[in-house]
Length: 150
Image (cartoon, rainbow, N blue to C red; front, side):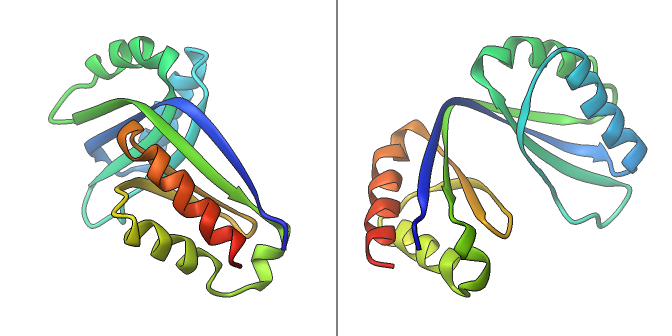
């Protein structure tokens, strides 16, 4: 295995709570964000239990002001939570797909370092984790040490 670590800094985490769970509404949100020229990095949606859900995504810090103006336009009880100055640490390895437990080893290393991971996105060959600036050095070191022992 030859995993690569890619770090993206200056990331804003946006969580919109109590958003309409209709896919048309969610598509509309991301269409408006795209129309503003804002690039979205990671997207996560909570399991839908009712007609409302929580939608979490990341953007570059430089786009935070534009996005906040957009969020202010929401009607109803949508509750936004915004946190800037974060990092995305991505581990990429094409061989990850056929190695059960790869993610669990990374998660264990982060847990043993007491790192708070804000959100995680995965694919067959990539694990991306959003961490705060305060946890970045510990997270990066934990992941690097873990990968050196795989």
